Length: 581
Image (tube, rainbow, N blue to C red; front, side):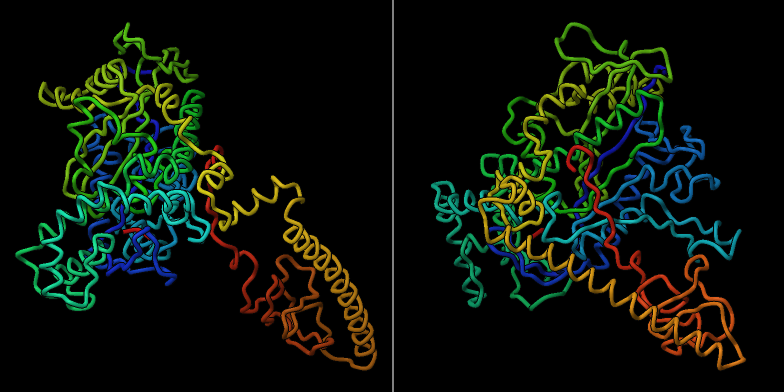
């Protein structure tokens, strides 16, 4: 282990870019329109620029060294490389990242899926030289395609838990009757009346204020949505009130760990898994885990950590989302650093998270630092974690500054280290607040609709209690079993009949007896690899032409979809763990 810090992994959570108008309920619910409002072209550029800034901080050798935040890639042998900032097939020149160490997930909405794609277009930027050198390969633009995984929004409790938690919605509904809310309603009555006077059709209640602001903002900024009156003179207080409303909805005393507990478990598992792999000298682990989500996702995670409830000068100085919201394409990232334990300041009482690395005889300390970028053009700032310690900050600063260019850079790095935790301290803080199992979240939120919750309930009941549900499952199993037997028997009968017909035709005819082939309905009698048919006609039961089937299976070369094409993209929760605005 050298005297410098090694960045082991980054776990990032991005807000999407600019989108079309999003009407939503007071309890953060949305309509059932599939995909939701689309990401605008301006949003595409915002998230691309955020990805480019992310690249500069973590992947570009020309810039990442100044902050000690270079994330190494891997070569074909699994060894660390510092020059492989491209994404693609391992072993290809310049490629240091691929699907074995980069994992990107998104909520199942247009604005987040597209934001994830655009963000990683900025992280792994196009390489026009690749298709120029090999015209038969790569996209013509040289774009590097990074897959973004998702799952049904109905079952997404990782990124979109805030839309599916009855316990949180009940707390939010009660807050609408609180003295705090009523005081703000009284204070804002004049502003809301002024808006209602110019826009009589609008519901200007405080509960609905986000929809008022969103419609005005999208129309005045992008010219989209239904036309609204001109509110230039009132826009700032209109926006401030909307920000107050949405930030207060995400305060820890309302959200607790209900909206970010499951996500926090995923973060913990990723950090701990990366530390274990790094300690063993492995490079084959997820170094870059990314979620494309919403500001509710970001604030839900911070609330689960109790960030807005902590005291101290550092917490008071952190105003990323107070009093405003995270900006479009804002990034929240958790960095895991391995630093020499000898760089730590002794005697502060903090645990060291030390372990012996198989790649070195030195003992290392693992340090967690959270950083935020409030929009693509902003600088990254440190998020002060409640578990922050002087030992962690001193160790990180000393290791990062081993390669500092000058005293000014060293001072900036030291300041940026304040707010970091040792990994052990972060685990001690986060583990009790996390919800590793979906059943934990389901019970805390009182949700019985998400598939994981229904499964957990049935497993807990052991088949008893809810006789109606158990009966349905039993019937489905029996029907499936009996149906399978009937289909098998039918298949045997059809096959026998076809075999007899084929023998009769072979005896009666003297032409074109093919070896196999797929009939016009996609049934293949070929035993060749992949169900490919041999040349020639096969006058069989259905008189199809070999190799031209339209089936649903793998037989022939037909235009049917096979099961792999129909399979849903995997939405992988970590080993421990497994409507936006």
